[in-house]
Length: 65
Image 1 (tube, rainbow, N blue to C red):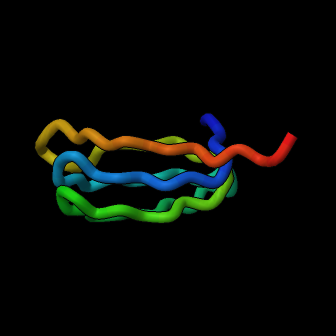
Image 2 (image 1 turned 180 degrees about the vertical axis):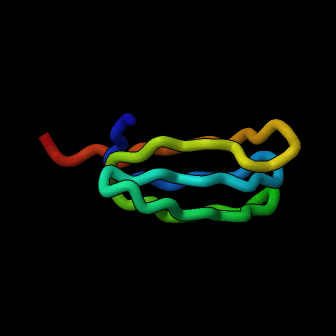
């Protein structure tokens, strides 16, 4: 399990992901190339559950110093 701050993710390929949260709940997400999404800070275990390689750009937002 790892953690990210608030972020924006932009899909470079289509993707089908499953995120396992700290409480064991799983969230599945189907994304299309070019999709941009807000992702709130948190911990998760990501898993590619699709049949193809998935690529994305994740832009993590930093808090003020």
